[in-house]
Length: 194
Image 1 (spheres, rainbow, N blue to C red):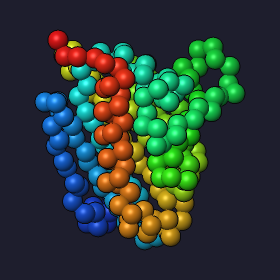
Image 2 (spheres, one colour):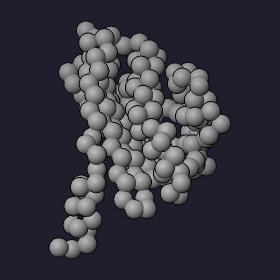
Image 3 (cartoon, rainbow, N blue to C red):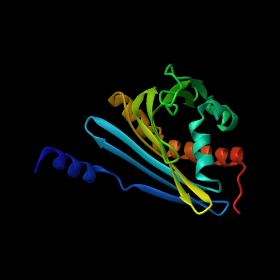
């Protein structure tokens, strides 16, 4: 058994069962998957949330990509602040744009757009805060609706933060925050099912 296979097998044994919740929101589907992996001495937090939004995929994608419009629809408690890229705008699909926000009062974190696949996905890297990692927004057409999802995988910057993240139930809080973002996004787009 090679080292990579052994570590993956060990990781599976130590994982608590993923929490799956299905929540009805105005008759639409929403799902959260939360998983904490704790292998000595690293804690990995991996969450995935999704919701079916009654808007076209292109419209949802554009709203998520436009960081400068986040103050119009994000919950004010997150204090979203755009930090524009220093890269030239020609053909870069917003790569390098940054958004800082406070998921917890007084604690700033942020995203930097690293990869864009037009109308399919937006990948971000966490550039500030007590953790490192990535997040991916995905957009899947479902008839006249869009299944939008956000998947995050972060690693606290030191073991003490890992313990704090577990005690503070960061994965559950993150899932609740993303579901709140989905609700605000729906209100901002004001789309309706046909």
